[in-house]
Structure formats: C-alpha cells, structure tokens
Length: 330
Ligand SMILES: [Mn+2]
Picture 1 (tube, protein in one colour):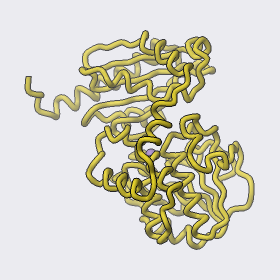
Picture 2 (cartoon, rainbow, N blue to C red):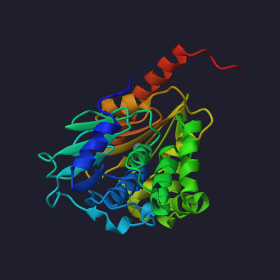
Picture 3 (cartoon, helix red, strand yellow):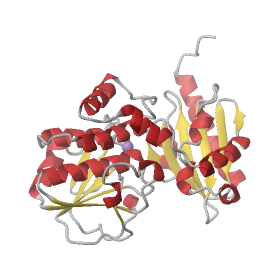
Picture 4 (cartoon, helix red, strand yellow):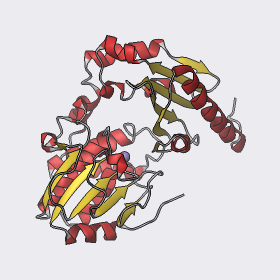
C-alpha cells in the first residue's frame, strides 16, 4: 500500500510559486517533525522566500539545542498572511493542532502509511525513512546548499525516526543519506549525546515507575504510568518519549504498548512491534497512526479495559503474522 498522490515536482512547483510560506508539523512534535520543520524553513530562506515556522506544542527539551529552534512559533491559531502552508507529517489539517489553516493553500508532505491526500498539493512517499529525507530531496531539487545547520536538523530527524537506525525500513539508502548529512557537517556523536544522553532526572524517575509496571504475557509486553506517577516523579509529557522501547526490548516481545494516563482520564498509547507485526493498522483503528513498527493512539480509560482492548488487538495481529510466517527455528 503506497500512497502515490503527487510527486516531489508537484510540491516543489507549488513552493516555487509562493512567496510567503508557513511551515508546520503535527502536534506533540517528535525529532522528525522538529528537525524537518527547521530544515525546510532554512531551505525556504535560501530560496529567497519569506518564511515562518510554527508548532502547536513546545519543542521537546531534547531538541531545543537544534539550530534556530527558538524561532519556531508556538501557536494554537495561525497568524499572518501566507500564500501557502507546508504541512509536514500530518494526515489531516487537524493533526497539526492549530486553528486557522482550513481555508489556506496547503502543501502536504508526509511519509506515513496513514498519510492522506487531503490538501490541494500532496506529496506522500511511504518509502522515505523520515520526512527529513523528503526535505533533503527538496533541497537537492532547489539546488540549495545543505549547510551544517540544515545537516544537523536533518540528521537528527533521520536518527530519531529510524529508532537510531534500528527500525525495519533502515536500508543502505538510509545510511547513504546519513553519510551525506555527516559530509555536510552533521556531527553524529554530539547529536547522539544531545538526544539520547541528556535526560532529566524526572524522566529517569518516571521510567523507574513505568518499569515497575512492566507485564508480559506470551509475546506481548506492556507497561503504564498513571497521572499520579507523572506528578510524583515531576515528569512532563515529553518525559514519556521512548519508554515503550523498554517493553519491546524484552526478548520474547513481538509487540509492546506503553499507556499513559492523561489529565482527562483517557490514555495515550505508544505501540511498538518487531518484524512484520503491523501496529500502524491497530493505531489507525483507534483514530491514531504511524509506522508499521511504531505508532500511537488514544483510548478511553480506565486503565484495565483500555489495556484489555489494546492487548486483544495486538494478540490477534501477532497471531495473524505467526500464521503467515514459517515458524522460527528452535
Ligand atoms: Mn517521521
């Protein structure tokens, strides 16, 4: 299933025609969203455009060192007059969490399986390892110079969106792209240090609480934190990033889920899987989205029925995959 609505050329032509462009990405931005918004904005500036970038949520702490990240506007409603708005990694206008985009000329650039051609211009490439790869290709099309700042933003996006080059879909091409970005000035060790070894104490305390809640049954592993856990460890939403990886890190785990209680009693879920087990499909069933091996969605509480609902879906997905594949050698 590859969405093929529009090509690089469509997106590039639309960008070329506009003078004033706004760049936005989805709410609760991840490394790909932040890095790609920044690199796209830098590219637009090189192209001589009047450009601004905005996100509905604050830039997570681990990405605030990225060049120019302090210039990202924090908006709940779009301000200003724009010829076009570039939406990165949004499967709908709503996904960016900002009002006031509905009647604007939109350019939709996405690499998710859940990507949809909702805008006048759509470029969806599910083969791209990160939306940053698409921004890189835009920069090549524009014959722009990949500056060290752009390279750092794009490299950080590729690094985080491939799970530090661990997820399915990481190919020789991914490393060629990463290599090119390093040649352009991205510094792998310094970037890894800033993203993976700069955690707050509150995040580590929260992780401890989550790990105390780790449960496994068959090839499923799950863990959770309540709002009380969040309060007691002094953690913020961004401190939940990556906790699910400890559950999928269990040897027998084929699929894993991390559940976080929200203030309104609902639960925010992060799903992970190994190999052919597809958690994007499950997240989409519940109104979320993402990639085959990494996705997210929100469920109604309380914890016990929410856990049962998601485990039932994961169990049947793992079973379907097991039936379609030859059994592993013992
Ligand atoms: Mn992405």
